[in-house]
Image (cartoon, rainbow, N blue to C red; front, side, top):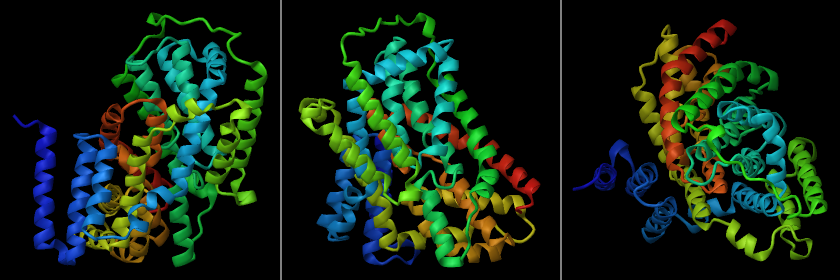
Length: 458
């Protein structure tokens, strides 16, 4: 008998073939074929019927064999700065682990976070949220937090297969990414939105206004919800876990100290990228280069080979390229306009308008991934403002609610990266994102509407 996942993929494949032949929404022939390939790829990623890297390889192969896109677009994920920051994250994580620095930091953190498992999860969320204010890259935050979190799990006896260890990985993945959607320079979609708003309409976002508008609900309340979901889905008791003693003579304290200095310098450079103008990816690459030199002894060649997860890199490359392909083919504009024509929006329907715009952003991200949402929706903002009666800035800000509402992990590259760094599958993360998405739509979005009303934004 066919399983549920296979049925979903089979039905999606039928829909993809139909779209390629019947060209819905007045698509061109190439657009219909690309749309079909995208649908199948999304179904494979969403169901996990095959590993993510297999789905990405299908995406690359189908586009190239069909001559539907050029190699520079199809493989744009490999040339993205995000990809190099991921690789740097793998190397940094390997150095933290192999040097024993992660275990030492975990042992120190144990004194403060080992009161209980809920206290541990809440503490890791608080640290992850704090990093969002000082480190502009969610990839970088994951690269720093994951090795420390996994070392802390080891110190507390939460070994591979323990739900508590998976819970730590999921918490860090979400904690280093989700709250920072509410901090202007801390996630890529935020920056893309701000840049396009300024370029197209001359609208500039204030750091404090952006924070005050979004952080109370999307930052604070959403983080509380994430902690609650993780504790519900991945229960554990630290008291039941045998905690291994640390062998203090195994690693060189001098080497750990030097690595800590290198990481602190990297953190400072990441935190001040708006001052010196160096992309965080290139800072991470420089750090990785230093750590990879065999004579320095931080990451040996065998450790490097074991640290780089090619499957995760292929998965991420596909997720990054999908948004580029959809936008460059014109599919993003077609889908957005079709969705716009069907939205139940109009003057005087403030709550309906607010929810429709937020869900438009969230739905668009399923096809374009999160960084592609501003590229697709920002040019439509004047039309949306006219249709809803909202100000242009209010319409632009609803995108933040949309692209921070995640249904599938592949929509946000850093989520996949964090789980890969932790050595965990993305399937447990999918359970959390699905539930979090439902709770966001049912509770957090209405609360956000009330908050915006209170502030007089709408």
